[in-house]
Image 1: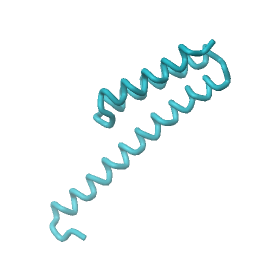
Image 2: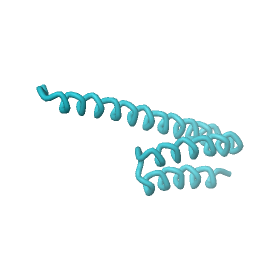
Image 3: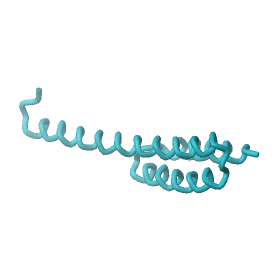
Length: 87
C-alpha cells in the first residue's frame, strides 16, 4: 500500500478511470450482441438499426480513447459485413 499522498491519489484516479473504461467496453459489447441477435433472428431492418446504434457507441468509446481507431473500425466493419451477407 502506498504511503505517499500523491501515490494514494494516483491509485484512486487509476481505479476510477479503469472503472469508467470497463463500463464503456461493456456497453460496446452489449450493443454488438444486439446486432448479432438481430442477425441471428434474420431481421435485416432490425440489424441495420442496431448497427447504427452500435456504431455510435463504438465511435464514442473511440473518441474517449478507450479503443484504438483501427480496433473500432474493425468492429464496425465486421458487423456491417455480417449484415450485408444476410439474404
